[in-house]
Length: 161
Image (cartoon, rainbow, N blue to C red; front, side, top):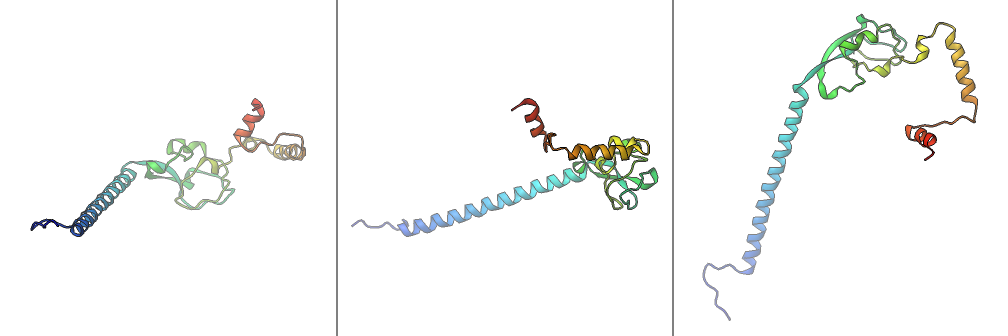
């Protein structure tokens, strides 16, 4: 049998040393990942709050059916990441004046183009709306007309694919 030298480690000590080194390395990797995640979160939050742009908001609560006016809206600075193309900007606010709002809006809410009546029948003379509604009822009652529900269905019907 071989004689063990003093200071040499046995199999059990190697196992314990390996486990300790693994635990220490795992803890260091965990701290590294946690600090990196915290850093990227702070960078993202700073990006959100750094760039503010103007948008149109309701200055008071608006009920569905109210007519928009310059007195009923105001301008507010909001983070640029919140804005989409459908948010009304101050330079575009003149286009929504005198239009009827379709949905109720609370004071301070961003105003979106889809909140306002922008269809063709909004600009029709009185009496024509009833005629248009009657035509739509007749068309909807016909069962032989195509009823696509998505752009993909329309493309498939038109192209035959």
